Image 1 (cartoon, rainbow, N blue to C red):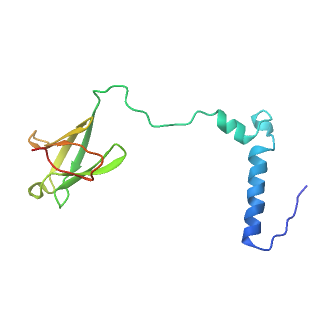
Image 2 (cartoon, rainbow, N blue to C red; image 1 turned 135 degrees about the vertical axis):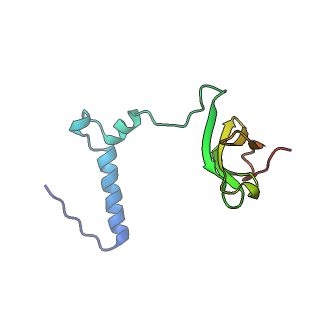
Image 3 (cartoon, rainbow, N blue to C red; image 1 turned 90 degrees about the vertical axis):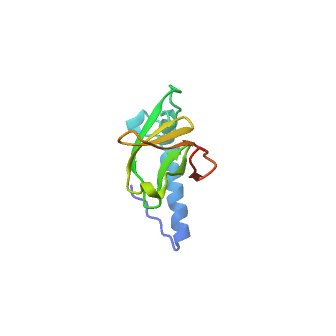
Length: 129
């Protein structure tokens, strides 16, 4: 049986749609999921979450090219960091080795261009002295 509802405004339409969504997900049992509501079935599913690596000695390897300003970007600790390599190395293809809060940038020939102690509280990461 079809139900027709007349609404006069967008706000009234939104209220009707919200009520339908609530009824569909939290009240109406569905045969396809064993007479459970979608909300109940959704709560049973394990949710994905970020996890720390099991191995604290895990290294990340990143291949990049130094930009025109002499920097590369690196995502670390849920932040985007910018490592200062130097303008003399612009357009140089590099390998960035990251271990915990330390990064080493080398060329494909093995020349070390910089070592860094990563600080997620700062966007720009200067070379270690």
